[in-house]
Length: 124
Image 1 (cartoon, rainbow, N blue to C red):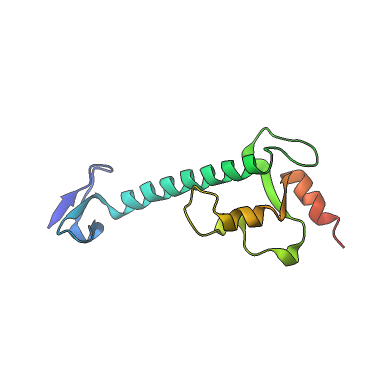
Image 2 (cartoon, rainbow, N blue to C red):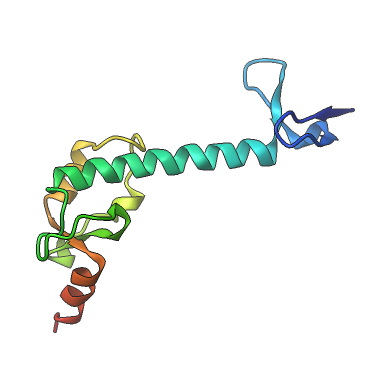
């Protein structure tokens, strides 16, 4: 048997569609379209979490006050030995600042990419 995906318009075998758990129904979208949709949602949630984290840390580079592009702002651990995890790999809701994330952010400075590189280059 086959089914047509309304997103990509392709007709594919049923094993190219996810079965909905707990129901005897098949997802309307093929696996590749569904995965692309999920990836988009994940990216949006991670961007929202970064926006909240940047806002929490003051919204600009602590050294040069750069604030034009959030993608150029990074979290620099003042003491690498105290680092529990990387901010982008934190567990919990993807768009929320959990207490664990806030505790990790408190160990960091918010730096632009250039100042972050300089900070690492100045280390012994």
